[in-house]
Length: 181
Image (cartoon, rainbow, N blue to C red; front, side, top):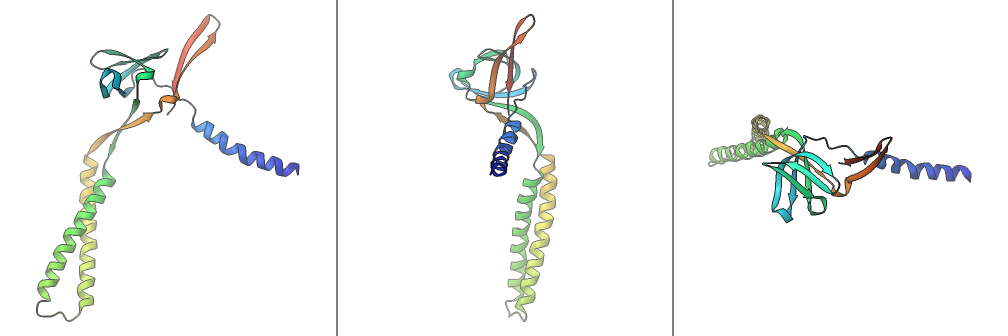
């Protein structure tokens, strides 16, 4: 009976420790690019540079220094670099290439079959092959174009993950903060 209880406890606790480990707060360093939304101040996805977190106030620098109360902020995003659009370009190019190839090959088969086609299976196979080849060529061209297109990648910071704490030190207290994302 004790072995079953121990096994059940281990099986119950392991997923919790993994979840807690994944939610460890990471610091948001001064100088990090952020995007904030503060409806009370009329700010909608304003790009800024994080300066500090002072108590219940977030300090960022955009055109000028802005002080935003945490309770009035509805969204904070952190810049995570750029990403290319290779996959999206390949998908769009593949679909477009396949569609154009399909249309052209059907048109050719229809014009050749006005007087009657001997083997419709051969014509259907030809249409399928041309469509696949056209889709592959389109996917390649689309991927190449997508590789040239870069977009910013932003990650939302859950507002309930922003923590402000007082840390004891030998010479007094220190104000600490962390942002988990």
